[in-house]
Amino acid sequence: MFTWDDLLKSTPAKRKKLWEQLRKDLPEESEYWEDGEACNEDILCQYFKDGWCSLQELPVAFNPYLTPRTGINGMACMGMRPPQQINLFT
Image (tube, rainbow, N blue to C red; front, side):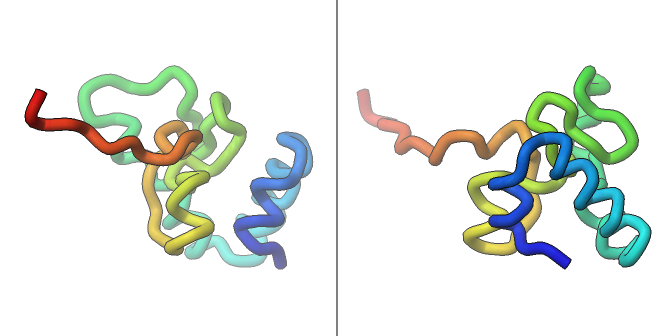
């Protein structure tokens, strides 16, 4: 088994290998992190295939910023930089 930090620190090839092993060992758990509903709201994302984000080389619902810190899911492509505060009164 691996931690989210292990997954992030791995090379893309190693990430895929770790994920394939998890899919075999815990299919229900992996299914949760492969839910690409957000990737398909308006149009089908070109990087989404079989629960995997080929842009970030991560499961599609694994947010690289939020998931390791909070355990919640998100979108792989939306967490590559910390959120920025928006000034509403400019």
